[in-house]
Amino acid sequence: MSALNGDLNSKFGSLNVNAAVFVPSWASPSSTAAPQHPTDMANSQVNGVAVNGSVPPPDDWDKMEEDDNGTTQQEQPQTQTTDKQQPQLSFSDAQNGIHPVEPAGDSKQIETEVKSKSTEVTMDTTPGPPVVTAPSTKKKAEPVKENLAPVKEHLNLVFVGHVDAGKSTLGGQIMYLTGEVDQRTLEKYQRDAKEQNRESWALSWALDTNTEEREKGKTVDVGRASFATDVKTFTILDAPGHRSYVPNMIGGAAQADVAVLVISARKGEFETGFEKGGQTREHTMLIKTAGVKYVVVAINKMDDPTVEWSVERYEEIVNKLSPFLKKSGFKKEDVHFLPISGLTGVFIKDVPSPNPFPYYSGPSLLSFLDNLPKVLRMDGPLRLPIAGKYKDMGVVICGKIESGYISTTKGKSEMLLMPTRKEVGVLSIFADKEETDIAYTGENVEVKLKGIEEEEISNGFMLCDKSDVCHVAKKFEAQIHIVDYDSIICPGFTCMMHCHTAIEEVVFKGFLATIDKKTGKKSTARPRFVRQDEIVVAVMQASRPVCLEMFSQFPQMGRFTLRSNDKTIAMGRVERLASKTQGSSGTSSSSSANASNSTSDSHVASSSNSSSAAN
Image (tube, rainbow, N blue to C red; front, side):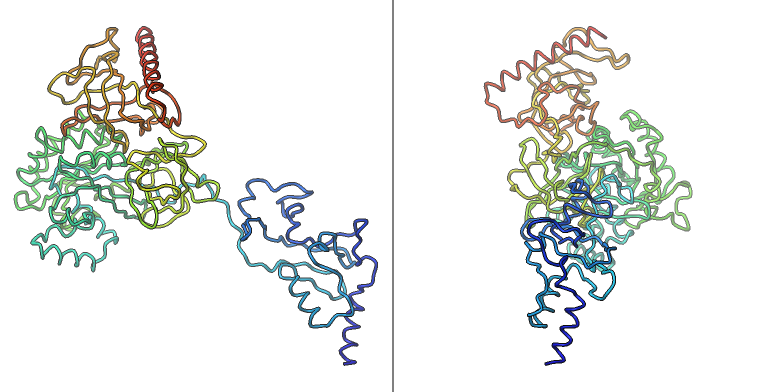
């Protein structure tokens, strides 16, 4: 016992706890610097965070972590005292329960108190200058680097073409050759397809996933899949080829950057799809209206017994399609023809050796896609048109980010859903089936939302930044090209408008002028009706508010297609929004809406007349 007392006395003597500088003063501040408690670090920081009582800048707030009580704590920076005197306790330390060591206490109790108070800071009590260290191993939260683009460029491919051209089989073959579908899964598809006497459909089942599609052998909804090469990442959008599902095909084309027009070289199948009323023609026109620039014409089934890699058949198809694609608005340098076999995989990933078709000396399909020029993207606030929705432990939406970025970072995950102005939060983001914290323009994503129910979402709704939302309008002025309609169109004519992923009923309210195709000049007189192949400036009114932008400002949200009686009759672009209200909720009363419409009509008419007079 005497030895223990002696040991304690020697330690207390070295601490010199009875010195005046160690006694906390309740009247005057101490003259030497005291080690700061972690809660005091907000007012005095080191390493460039904040000093002299200044508030940390907003960029550094992201590095703070919240505790269970909702308060923020920042990691203790490493400091070192240079004064040879022992550091004294400050007034804030006394408030937090840190007191001078009393000699009369028990040694075990003293050691426990010292350990409990040194979880964040450990102090050397040996003679000499004390050293304060920060042994915490927690990693600092790095702020999201918003200005970085994905490591690989992302492209959205839409497979279009006539029914039974082999679009789904081609997509399944690409998935298998790139390793997204393994051998075991393919063998399962082959066994299941053999049981239904549909062995040639096995590859298509990688994209046609539901029972109806597999039983009928027809794609109904737009199939989605993803794969990657050494250069780029891709999202496959497998559009249906049957004419009954063209509205679904338009929704897939609206998300595409590049189109793969699949043509069947088999005798009779190419002719059926290319004749008037065939889906080859209609799909070509629709992808041009959707803003797709590059088209890869994949002449499929070249290994069919009726073709057998015939040069004459290949040239026949190329010679018939080339003038039609040029007439549709595609430049020669933006169109590429190549022969393939979707069933065997020839010319898809690599050029085979020996080459069964030496007439073609170009690259394979994937090599050509890797070497495409970089697609230009919109730079602006978030615009994500919703192309689909489902429930999976919450509400999940899917679509392509047309501009901006989406993030799960706190403070940046709160969005507005237009046109209803519903506030939603982003819980998680999935790009190519992998969860990520941020996704950029051009990526096809699935986003899990909070604060909304599935019934409150429709295709064509727009996910926007709260600070900058899209325009919403029911009435607008548009330039429309009538491409296929047997009769005349008069004011009051009703049809369906497909704009980005939205589908709304619209009516022609009136015509302002016709446009000469050769000179581009507008007529001075208002036409009473329009016919096929004419270009007209018309006032359109939708049945409900639609998320729209002027074509000159945002092409992806300013172009549309008009359909009537299951046939595409016209394509157009938005020239002016009659009721140019940004973020309008569309909930005004009927009387005020009618007044607004009449005012908008007069505004559009007067502005159009003045512009025509100027021309």
